Length: 120
Image 1 (cartoon, helix red, strand yellow):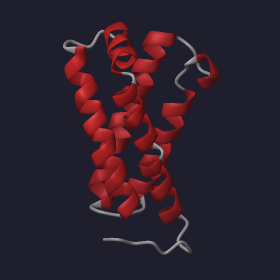
Image 2 (tube, rainbow, N blue to C red; image 1 turned 60 degrees about the horizontal axis):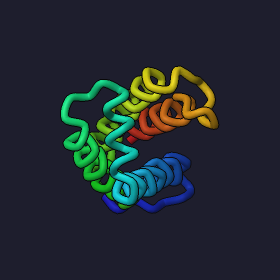
Image 3 (cartoon, helix red, strand yellow; image 1 turned 45 degrees about the vertical axis):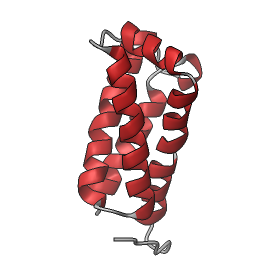
């Protein structure tokens, strides 16, 4: 808990995985209509509820990863969350490159979270 030993290569990766979730949560707060629209296109029932869940999840999990709290279970949850995000992006945007709204970015972070979880 509260491991900040930067000589261990997984610690900076863990911190980055958490830190990169926080701006995404903030973006959902700043533009909830856009997020609701995305969840609607992805076919989620109750998209407003999913936006609230995703926002809270990203804040809590992101903070826990940055601080090193319950790293293994939190990183596995983040891995699953980013896997769903990858599938949703692919379903909505039907693209690979993140510059075109594709699934490349969430898949990368899914793999990074999985690496952190497996090495915690």
